[in-house]
Length: 229
Image (cartoon, rainbow, N blue to C red; front, side, top):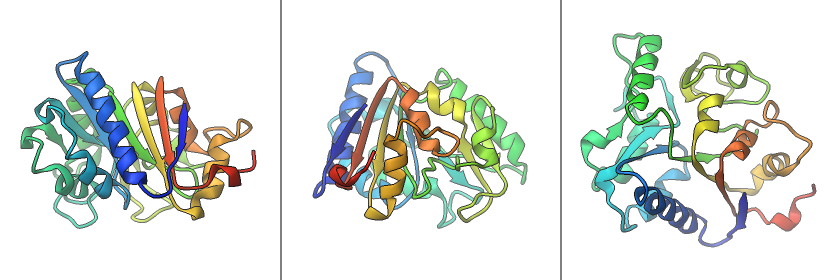
């Protein structure tokens, strides 16, 4: 794991790391899967990433988690991701989570089937750590973190609104080949402390699941000297 403190150009450096990983994986595979979250950090990262010189036609984008809303809803994570990359990635390379006929479970199975077409894992997973240590919609001391599904889960009672979501599962997180983590804002200092603390576990800090991923980069604008471990 590499933890990098960057005060001024956090999003640019994060995008650069993602871009370098994309180039690395495309040197080994014909196509790769990039897993992206929603949240306020992702759009500026995508703005920088879109300028990275890679073959975007070989990149397939899946969501890390999604609110159970139509993809054209303002709250849709996919809508945010699409707005950042739609000019450079072919439409068929976007893989939104779509609720069909109000049947979330059936839609979840279809999303599983879709990722299985690409070996059933994310080559590069991008996540943002929340103030409570959550990633995706996997929350501390919550049924979501205890769900042992292989691919995705439905969250009925998310502590963070809206309450109903889908999310990458704990097992799916750990099958990723590389991960880029962003944690920004001093209000998340406690979450970063818990993430770096060897005495905490993934049940109390779901973000620690990414420590099982072979290649891991963590970017933060929180001064690491202020973290007491």
